[in-house]
Length: 112
Image (cartoon, rainbow, N blue to C red):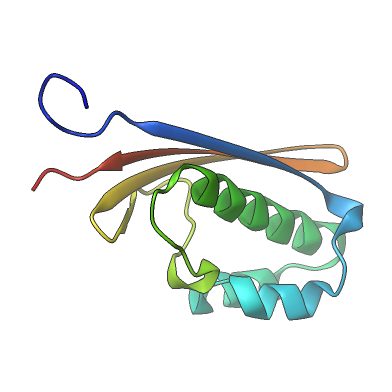
């Protein structure tokens, strides 16, 4: 606990080797929110799998830092917006380089 009585922010990170993703469409249906899945379908080729890898890495980063269970499709990842989930605020950064996608999640308990 920090001086104000709230939980210290937690950080999670994950990296995904893009070409190791298998059964991409099945994975996308299972983990993406409805809006993310529509966006995923709007891409083609490498950009589509790159998008999926980034969203998968983001969810893995969140799971590593979030002290409660998370069902992947229950949240929508938009790095431009703060995510609010079960009393926590989550900020995400996703980056791609070559055959890798990585994500960092910063998670903090929301004020009561």
